[in-house]
Image (cartoon, rainbow over all chains, first blue to last red; front, side, top):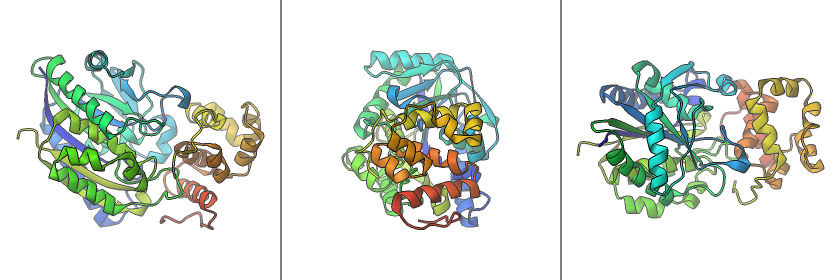
Length: 283
Length: 107
């Protein structure tokens, strides 16, 4: 049986790379602290695979044929995709994949009643995978990655309860279908409050962000599921804040665990509240 | 910005996704926008809205805001910094009706 030995979640705004140099010093220090902590912990965790769950951002499928879950099955993942490079302004990277784990996930989730789509070719990655990669050094520390790209944008999207249930099934799959001794990490990538493409593009709802992070630290999953609804998220940024559904997949996979925030910053030009948390997996 | 008016069948979605995924098409769009738009079965009011940079009208027709933001970047600039900031401000100006300078970086 596999074991989830590391679980974190963090924001992935493109400005974290492309606009980082122009940010205030205190913002940069907070970003460095959050992502630096995760980089060190991921590197130290001796992971056999890191599963990164993130918004697809309409990057890989047409609106008319859009999957809720798309798994990157490639032996190597390269990015960022060409059109996103000027926007992200981050280094190119190549990540080792785990096609065997990707196949096990697609098969195992089908048996558990949830359709995970998969592609063997390289997917198009924007900030969803690129930001955690370059800020947490997935490429240089050599951790194998399997991305799950999530539909957070094309209605109807899987809501917090559906994502939590998907996470529960994924956790069961990791514990029962993956090889004995496999050390698995989970990374929920997305959020916090933001509204890309909307009239409140620069808006960051700090009150919501702190409320959500507080709820995570309190650790009551029923309360999270009852209160962090799609409607509440939309008030704090339509089409962007819903990326937090990726965090709900992590929550479902690990169950109630102690959680602590690694940091938070709100800088208008990032156009996104930026925060990170870690769950204690040895508790 | 609710998704209540979202229309998955809007042809503009296919245009934006093709432009993102096809560098040659993007070069043609930058050189001659009209010739690229001519290849898509856009409704006349949809075509007018793109020609006029009228994102408010496109959103009212059901354009997905995320792809609307990317259309703004395809039209006004995609690079991190001044280019993308100009695109965001022109998009927000169209949606809100307010007058926004191209270099504004706040709400």
